[in-house]
Length: 90
Image (cartoon, rainbow, N blue to C red; front, side, top):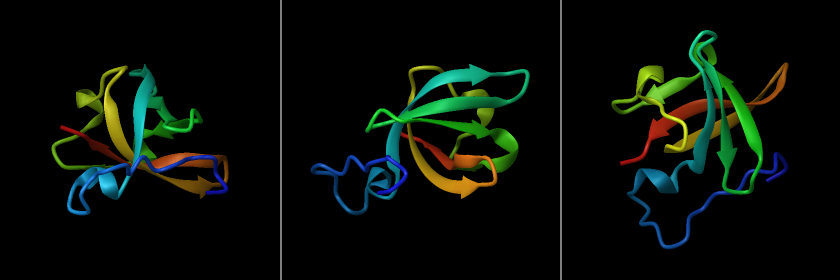
């Protein structure tokens, strides 16, 4: 992909949510601004702001923790590549 992210599909079954998202790790959270940074499997750090993110499943900003593995989707905004969807992986 041109944005530097890579999907970590490996041997994941097609019906597993991880097959539909990039797998990343929450590396920074900023509760005051309700924002953070996710590191993708390729090592790229992609920021997010809660107002621009769709949470799937039982997730919300309050459920996120640094070091947590999440499924993410990214998109281009006027400020560059940003996380657009977060799904907490079980």
